[in-house]
Length: 469
Image (cartoon, rainbow, N blue to C red):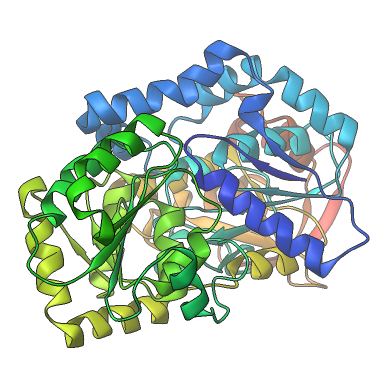
């Protein structure tokens, strides 16, 4: 079961990429892809989707502030979990009825809900979480889970620095549509769109919804001195498409104006520049085909951080002024060597096979999930907020990983203080512990605190030998 949330189009695009990869890898498996917002009530749907984009338009600073407030892991857990469970009962029923063996989530909302179902023993599936932006954000981390797929190595290193065991996280990239890494018949694509082979192609994207800022970009390109031809993709905004067609009527031979198209993969592979917003999916698709980006209007929070990464890797330039977009593009087109370096850098960081990598590893995962105790969650929050590695926290708050001695698989994250309550010696590398608290963690009541109830729990049920690191 592949789960996403239709906040924008990127999460569903990533889910679709994984679905295609699964169908290629295991033709006999039954795969069900679901957008969680399609199962929720209208008020909740609007809160998650429409209200978000209204804020992006009217108060982007507030979006950035909210992103930063939720940046540390587990900070808003109790608030958001209650609200989400209340509004997603039909979704939970659908998952229970389907009873999947493997769950892959490309949005944090279904990931948290599936985690709760695992905790309550309502499912026996493996849960993998797939990040869809280049930087990790705290809302994506949950407990329990089996594996987290980060978009890049730095995000993987960050997760391990705040305590996630290295066997539970890998950097596979953001899943992109199948075929982006394959060769393309350039001449055939150019002919299909009536484009000239001797001029660079500038691909201007308004996004799936069709952002009206596109008219300003097109106005800027009309003033450019460099020879070029442009393809303007307006998404599902028919009014925008009509407006731009009128805007370029006097230069129609240089512009191809499209609505929503399923041919973006071909267009990206024959273009010289992409002009648009640095969403996680659009950015990773550009990188997969080696297409340099001219970044405009990044949303504060995740898109600004995506832009930072692309600029750091030398695969993009950013326009901070709406009135200089044409100048920036003109400069690049007039400097073929610089444009070639940008393309080479984009190709270097691209992960065209990310969807297949995620699918393969998700299918191969077996064994128990990773449990993160409440005290360990508090330590991870402290680590994230203060910028202190988990290994550098005070002794009682320092995180310890419990592992299966036979397989080496990480089983749980606890604090040093919790281990002492359970009877482990300070500095011990293994212990024979009574671990009924794992059962208590499966319900994860808000007031559960191993430090105060651990000794009472020691008198019950399960014992297990674990290694500690």
